[in-house]
Image 1: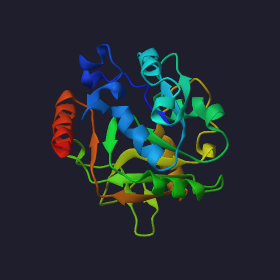
Image 2: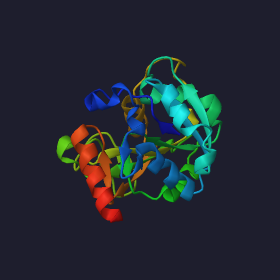
Image 3: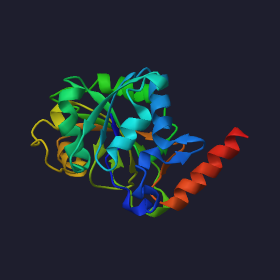
Image 4: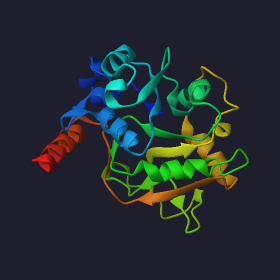
Length: 227
């Protein structure tokens, strides 16, 4: 699942007429980078949610055939936050564990490892496997602590930043009411306290494309890498 329902307030005015995942970077839309990497890892059945300017996403990507995948759309009348959006898409996602990617980040991670992690998730735990990255300048305090045994903890030091990439078991979201906004962090922290969240550290390229400046910097980097 690719999360693409956010409004992108910090990206305005770029997002006034274009959904943030469709903003071009390195010659193609940000979301296309995700789709291509997912396809390369063997993911051909994708679910994408949307709210703000969702019709533009559907117009641009259609059923995904041009990119070698099949896209099922999960529209939201208004954005349901991360956990709420995933809960709303569960009927389309099915009963098996799945991988989720934030549509507004760029990451060179190999999704094959997340596919393998998803296969190890169970309803009685572990419920999720998260990809953590080094803390960026704009989020120096980090989010969670990764223990040597692979368990992720809500408290303690040192802390890493959640990348927005993870594998989840549907049971993590099953108790949430549908069509109700819900944040992901409280669910994760509760499961962490029960020892049911694992993770790994990704030391490669990752950027939260949250401002026009970061978008421009990433665009220059990718264009230069191709030249």
